[in-house]
Structures are given as C-alpha cells and as structure tokens.
Image 1 (tube, rainbow, N blue to C red):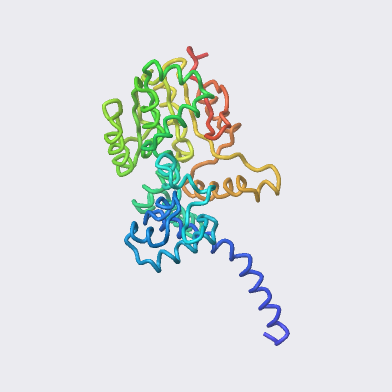
Image 2 (image 1 turned 180 degrees about the vertical axis):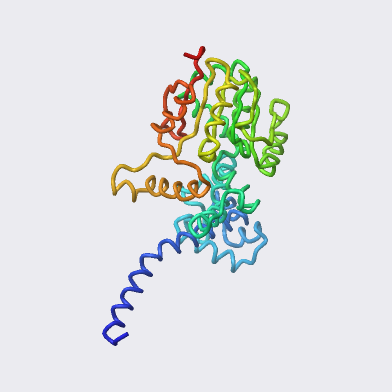
Length: 346
C-alpha cells in the first residue's frame, strides 16, 4: 500500500460506515424498545410519568430509567413534557391491552428471525435444524395472537373476501387447517364463530403444545382437535367445510400430496383458503421499497426451507391442477387465494 492509497481507503471506510450506520442504529433501537416493553416502562407511559415513577414501577434504578427515557425520546417513542415523559401519539398502540398482544410477538421474535436469516445465508440449515425456542418464536411471528380481543374481529374482516366460508362457519361448519402452527388464526376463528369446530395439523409437537394451552385459556378446547401429523396423510373424506392452508411453510416435495388430501377432506362446494406472501416487485424502485425488500427476504428465508414463493397466478395454477376452482384473491391486509372444491368433479 502506498501513501497515496491511504486517504482513498479511509474515505471508503467512512462511506461504508455511514451506509451501515442506519442498520446498526435500527437494531439498537429495536432492542431498546423490546427491553422497555419487557420492563413495563412503555406501557406505564400511556400517561405522563416522571422517571422516578417509572423506576418505581419497573423496580429499576432511577438513573438507568432516566437514560432509557432519554433514549426513547431520541427515537421518537417518548415525548418529554417538563419533568415527565409519555408515549408519542404514533406509538400509543404499545400501551393498548388489545393491540399490544398483536405487536409484541413480532418485536420479540426479531432475534429469532435474525438468527434464521443468518443461517439461511451462511449455512445449509433447514427449518428443523432451527433451535426449538426459535421455531416457537417464528411460529408466533407469522400469525395473530388470539388472546387479544381484536383478533376475532380481524379474522372476520379477513374473511369478507370469502363469504362462502363465512356462511358455513356461521352455520356451525368445520375448519381444517394444514400447518396450523400455534393456531393464531384458527383460535381467532373459533372465537368469532361460536358454532364452528376445528381440526389443526402440524408436524411440530412443541408448537402444538402452545396452541393447546391457548385453547384452554380461551375456553374453546372442546371445539378443537389438534394432531401432530403430516397434512398430506390426512385420509378424511368430505369432512371439512373450510380448509386453511398455510402454504408458505410447505416444501415443494410435499405439496402435491397435501393438495390431494385437501381436495379429499373438503366437502363438495367447500372452500380452500391458501395464504399468499407479497407479490414480486415490478420495477427496480419497487424492489427497494418496503414491500420489495420484504419479498426479497421471504425468498431467502423460506427458500432456505425449500418452500417455493408462489405468486397469486402461480398458486392459482397449482390449485387448479389439483382439481380446485379458483374464485378470487383477497388483497386487503391479509392475502390469500380462495378456491372451491367443485360440487362434482368434471
């Protein structure tokens, strides 16, 4: 290296450090928020509080809480008013007993998501080599928390695009779910439709244990059956009114058998609801927009588990080949493809 090279290298390091800084700051801010939620500081600041009051509630040293409040203010989460701090209006959902259960699992799952992405990029790790605690965090990251009073309403709103399913559930229909995970959506459905019953299938016993515990807590365990089983081996015939398929957890090799089992299990005229991730961006600008970045990350993470990322058109073709009649794609909020088992096979 010659002396002439040194300034250029130093400038490169400074430029690269400046590019990396927002990423590092974002990780630190998320960790700060997660800790403040765990300590109860964020929730306690729904009304103006002094650091002394907040420290007493959290059972922490006042000087530490003062530093935490200043850091939360610096990130726009707290607003300082004279000697007190309160949650900024944009962040008030974090103090809501209804909204917080929906937001907190996504925040708390980020370390597990980070580790899964590192493994997806730097190793040949699969879903089943992921640590149990991380699998449980990921399972809660991708679904609703059914203990929030908001989730039954969210589930009903999501099913507006599938009125055929709603009518069957209101009449006491049976919901079967392939890849039910911790049953966030399924348990929300049982609360929203008190006459409905459900069967959930998943391969992961630890995930199903959380679902079973939640069902008891919500008082819906008598209307729910959980099985640790491969969805593709379900041999029930015409037993389901609605079949929900979390298809973005199903590897390519499993999908044909799963769709055959779904067709067999649905009653003629029954509804298949298959989840969709975001669509591929159409331009370079869209690729760097938030939804484009999400789509790219999905390809890395789910792709490392051998799961194909289906567009709406590709999923429509896949279910059509299995004998279903595609009806429509729900685009508002929660995205899914609704398809129907024909009343009679052509």
